[in-house]
Image (cartoon, rainbow, N blue to C red; front, top):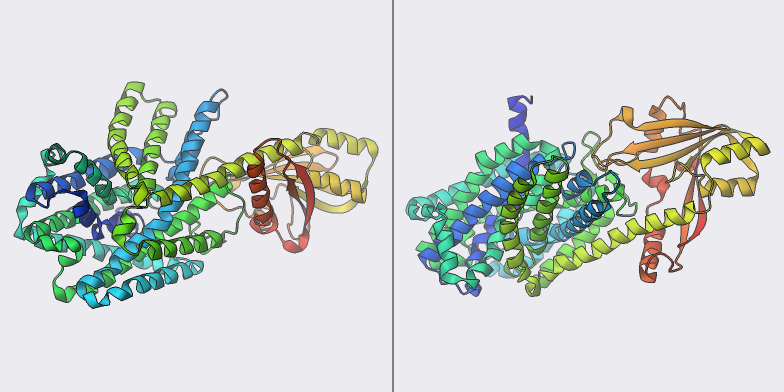
Length: 619
């Protein structure tokens, strides 16, 4: 049982990480939902209808689907679509179709999140800085340069980590949500009639009155729930109770007060629709509000960027991306990491989006397609878990899934209409990421088959060594291989060229479990093979970065000192032959293989004791 004070502290911290994305939606969601381009007249019933859609979207999607149901599906405390995929992957035989379905949904869903990681900082920061135009129209030419400077500064700070700044996130967002509530409450006092929008018949009447136009408005209403996936992805950082407490006790009331306040303002002053959020503030408060909004959007962007780093590490560990440099930025928090390649790629993409679309309204067309698709995938994966893991009755799972998909599917279909307006951007990013991830996964499988087709088992190799009497030299050699049952190619190459073998040989394999973390006491498993050869398997969770130097030293059963043994690693030089995959895909895999992070660095081996040997592999 977590102490009450600890729960409240985690709820405060969650404000700065979990709710940054959904908490900055008031900057643009109402404006886009009531925009004249939808062809819906700005009249009281239309405003009440849109507010009713906003209210019930937050209740049905965030409060019920994610907070009540989806958060039950944690992978040893961790959330997010990759964790969900690892949880639902069946291990029993005869379940290949379920495995392929879960993998396809999870991998493409993860690929879509990279598009979200590019668009969220762009639209959030740009919408905040655009408040300068409301405060002083003469500052409009400075909006884009200032947005670009803020984003460059944000990405440039990533190598330093978020530990120090992160402690300010919660208090800043506490003030932000209080400001949202205060601004909305002032407007509601002047027009409390908009609270009638909580009645669902206003939403139904809106559809009855406007038909297809109301359907198109749903694509903009979706902007109020775009942070839903972040709630689930950050489950492991804070736990269910603090997130639920923060949402129902503080975030949801603040958001609803602000959304209804914006509606009240627009009904009283239709001209405020240009930027209803900033028009709610008095003139003297607009510059401070712009600064606070900019801080809130930077925090929201930070959460998305950090999520992209975590997603990349998970994908690497699960075998869907090549090794790349992962830097631990905190000595105490394992979740605080920095991935240079992802950071600079996101920065260039985000700046390109800002300079290409030039306004948050234009970016709203690109925002939502990827997230809505992800939400559909999350619902389908949740259904698989409920059926196969929890053994819920099929009828109940079908009814629940149908209810979720009715809402998710509606949002998804309305967002598909945005594809010509910019919705193609996240889909293109997702398609590229999905191609890379599936190519790497399949390529590794093909490479394993190609190398394993003409090698020996360790047991037969040990028998041959004892029979032939190979010259042994003092010392210990550790050979890294992906296949613990077979002799590594690098070992055979070493024996063929040097005609000697170390007196002690350890065949070491690093594996990733389908769980976020593995306890230290269950990390290593060793077994003697014979002829001085031992098999060692090190198991890591998909949220962990391997560190062989540390873990070999801690595994006292083997009595290894990483700074005294010699490490041998094979670096396969892939030669595309068009035998297993399309030629273009084999060439792409060969390119990824050549540019992958050195295993010496990735596995944290002592460079002065490590030797990489190239081995040609035709696939």
